[in-house]
Structures are given as C-alpha cells and as structure tokens.
Image (cartoon, rainbow, N blue to C red; front, side, top):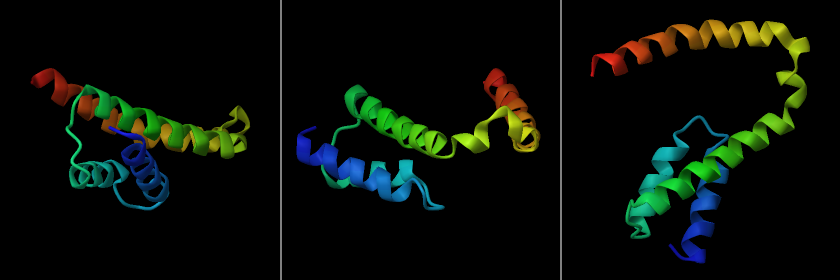
Amino acid sequence: MDIFQSVIMGIVEGFTEFLPISSTGHMIIVGDWLGLEQNHFVKAYEIIIQFAAILAVVLNYKEKFSPKKINLWMKLAVAFVPLGAVGFFICQAN
C-alpha cells in the first residue's frame, strides 16, 4: 500500500463513517478497486483508521458519554446485552 492508496482509503472511511452505510464494506470495495491485496497490513490499517474515526466521534460527543447521562448508558446496555449474548452463544456453538 502506498501513500496515495492510504489517503484514498482514509477519505472513504471519513466520508462513509457518518453515513448510514457500511464504511467497512466501502473500504473493502475501494481497496479492491485500488488493487490492494487483503493481507495483514491492509486489514490492520483498516482497523486502525476505523478505530480513529470512532475515537473522534467519542471525543467529539464526550459529554454524551459521561456518567451523568445514565439514561443513554442504560439504553445502550438494553440494546447491546441481548445481541452480545446471542453472538457469544453462536460463537461458542461453532
């Protein structure tokens, strides 16, 4: 992966992270168009730039993630725990 390809991948991640579409899917498609081989380096790069985008959102909205917003945390728990349990049991079955 050269600098041009990494910049293009970063732009795609930046534009698609905040849209209700799959940023991961778009990065895979663009990586394929750019002729990138899905090796460990490219996968690590994709994970790192996605983590950076999520971290930017969390830092930008840090007041919403404070303990004072317990209502939000309860809603997140109610949304996550059942799905997390299903995923855990599906992984254990395989």
